[in-house]
Amino acid sequence: MDSMQVEVVRRHLRLDGVQYELTALREAGGDYQATWRCPKCQVGGASLLAYPRPNAALDWAQNCATSHERQVHAS
Image 1 (cartoon, rainbow, N blue to C red):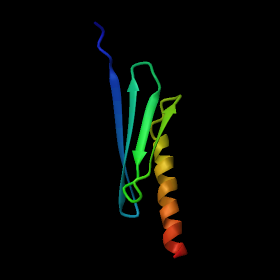
Image 2: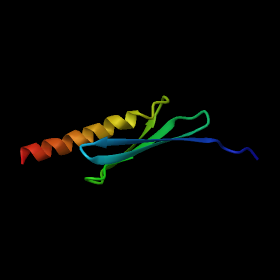
Image 3: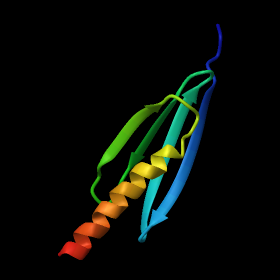
């Protein structure tokens, strides 16, 4: 029985005092499955990345943080 190797990449990003946790999983020879969750609004996202770039999830977190910032300044 073959054992499946899974690579796990975790990144933490702090924006405006909010800690985002980003995780990317990849089976050997496969695509990354990257996920993220925003602790402020509990919005999360997932995407299959066709290339090994788990940090792409940082873009999503940055967009979410920017959205919060706009809401704060608009009020």
